[in-house]
Image (cartoon, rainbow, N blue to C red; front, side, top):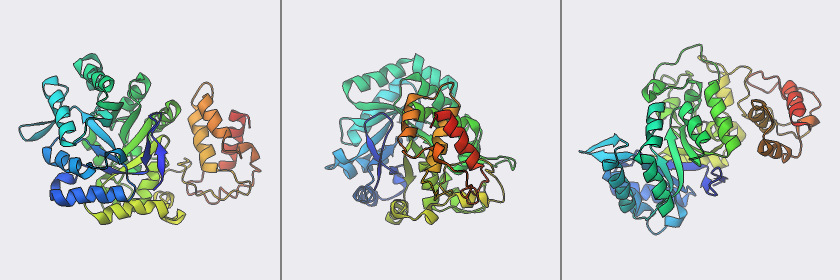
Length: 380
């Protein structure tokens, strides 16, 4: 298992994570065993947004005795009322729900205290202007949460959070289908029909990823499989089938992403996700799937897939392209991006314009032209 820095938190999280929302539909003993199995495979980050007692009671004993191994995302504002999950900012429910989380998880802290599920601006403002945020800060000061995070499906809210200086990381919904979808406050609409003229990554989402990379806001990715729809050509908006490895690779090639939080029903599904770590480039290749899609096109857009390799000058073209996209939207190249670019060693100025990479690009990107533009922008 490989591990990545989660933004500026100082935490190193496994590239493959554990999204816990399917736990409650299984026998407790089996689910406890499933989490422990995932831990044995090197998975060390688990999300618990669920408010129901059963899910929390599963995670508690599953991580007991091995608490230091696990980095937990615990959500503030996810409550259980009259046998139902309720998202709320009402402190009469928020406080006891979070205390219940600590009790059932058998811990006195969670690593990542998540401001739970904010998708509209009124809710975000309400969080900031009410006792809710005071409580979050109290939890941080008392050590009951180590870092403040936020979960959202809306890049506009993610942008506001990243710019607020309040959060250190964000859990965001990421997959090839969602990335085409314009910002919305309605999560359900993102699983609906996709217009045939959608093409490439939505600009607001791309800008959000760039902002997080620039500000060192780590991202953990929920819904990497699009609810399993990407495994079915009838449900996939692309009209073609992806594999778990391809979905995970797509997620992990987005700027600022540290971990793909996958949901599991079985050990076999854990194995399928963890197999990403030993997969070949061919097995990771999501780009050919997208490029051959009958429904949507990313033509002319670099999505950092690495198909352009190898380069005779040993340029890491995908990374150069990523840093170029991160920097070109700024009035001045951020020092952090400049230093990361220079640390590549072989930079865009080494490009000899042979264009051999362009014949391999599934999206017909004018790579040699981009390399020249990157060399000019970064000065090397």
